[in-house]
Length: 284
Image 1 (cartoon, rainbow, N blue to C red):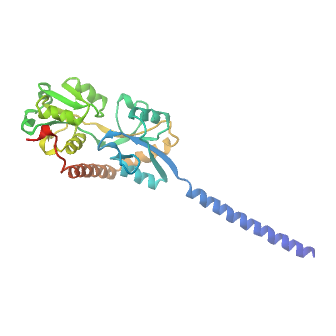
Image 2 (cartoon, rainbow, N blue to C red; image 1 turned 120 degrees about the vertical axis):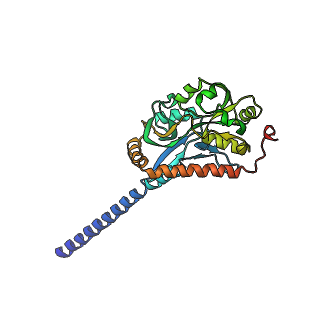
Image 3 (tube, rainbow, N blue to C red; image 1 turned 45 degrees about the vertical axis):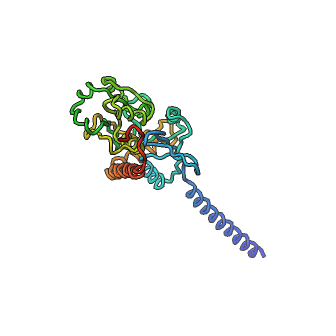
């Protein structure tokens, strides 16, 4: 009788151990599946093609940046869920990066006061060159930077520039205009002789105005402005993000992919806006 009772107790203990082990295995598997982390990201809000908030009547505003594919591929491989933050003015978003409420900011300039306190991830794999736009029959007037000092220029005040470019601009006679339409009207009417613009932004703006083929851009860049990915020093993900991104950015494949993506984005802008009717100031 005693032996029979002991056998029952032994069987019961075995069942409990097996059940406990199975439960532990389920728990471990469940934890592995829920190890996704939120990655909070922001960028320029109004500086296409580098960063822009797209507003659609049928959906919530969506942040589009030239880095989107790069970041989303990274997130997928490393089990992050991306949340794009675009619900505040740009300067407030930068403050949120400094506080650690946003982990990454896509596209910042080196040695520029507004980004002081944000950590740069090296190397840069994207450059935003400064150019001049002029009427085609006048573009040959400018062979050197000194030639520009003899002329009157204009610039879109919404441009985002590195501090060293902003400082250099003080050596030129430049007026600032709050929108591209009024800026290029001044160019077409002869009120200014040229437009200072970052090349890619200039391509986008002239395409959207329907004047892309009526304006010529300088073949050589005036200043290079490398763009970096910035990381919050107070982000809970700082160490892992910095380590992984540093390794990725040293791979030349990502630079080439991003450059190709940039070219495709500009071509798409030009194609989408081919039927845009130019403003009255541009009509012959």
